[in-house]
Amino acid sequence: MEKLVNIGQSVQIKGELTGNEDLTIEGKVDGKVFLKDHNLTIGGNGRIAAEIHAKTVMVIGEVVGNITADDKVEIAATGSMRGDIVAPRVVLADGARFKGSIDMDRKSAAASQGTRPAAPAVEVAAGAMSAKGAAGA
Image (tube, rainbow, N blue to C red; front, side, top):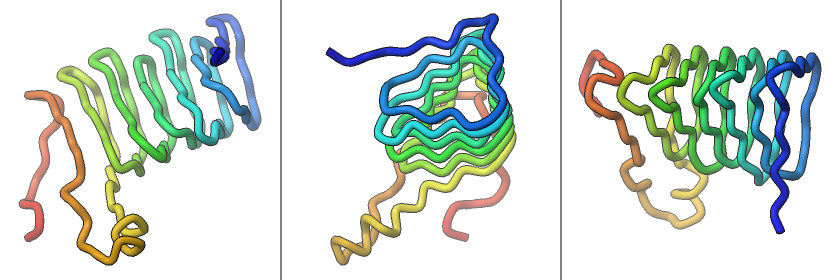
């Protein structure tokens, strides 16, 4: 049975948060969050000012800081993020707020296979963000 841990709305954490299980944060965290091989959900009441590293990150609340995910970062329609994302897959829902950069480079996977990387998987809902310039230009 997989464990799911909740940090409630009234909880505030300052410092480094690490763990080996999935986590949902509804409170406030200031510092670093590291969940190797596990999922992190920032709930609708969650307010995070931290560097984040996890397998997948779902932002429903607010994040200020950089996110590194081994699998995917998803920012929901109610989510807000200011910072940089490094992940092979990124989803920005219609209405999501995002300011920062996205790096979806899969160099390590391509180097091990000896082939060119496949096109990164990006899902951007209509009106979610705008970009200047052309890819590959």
